[in-house]
Length: 130
Figure 1 (spheres, one colour):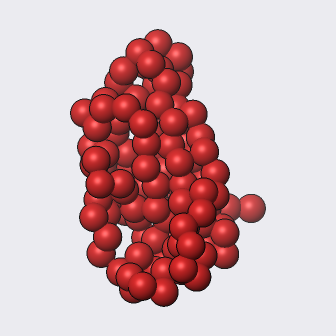
Figure 2: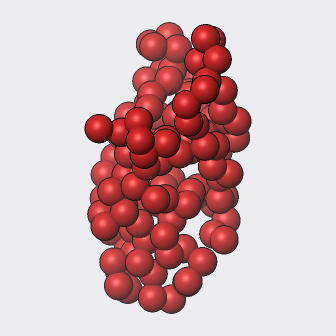
C-alpha cells in the first residue's frame, strides 16, 4: 500500500440515534490515500483556524495529474469539518503503471500542518445511495 494509507470505516444500516461513528486518522506528510470502490466519502476535520486545501491527484498512465482541489474550512467555520465524495473510480482512482500498490486508491496531499488535519474515509452502504 502507498505511504499514508488510511483505514476505511464501513457504514451501513443500524447506526444508533447519535449517528454513525468513524475512526479519524491524522494526515501524513508523505501524502495520503484510501482504497476506493465508488461508495467512499472522506470526512475531513481541520482543527486549525486557517483553511486547508486538499489536492487529489491520480497517475494517468505515467503522468500524475491534479484531479480536484477542495478547501476544508478553518475550525471556526462548521467546526472545520467537510465531507467530500463519493469518488467515481474512473476519475479518482490511481492507474499507476510504475507502482501497483497505488492502483485502486484515491491519492491526495494537503497544505498545512499534519497535526491539524484529521481524516476518515467512510464506505457507505450502496443500498443507501440513490
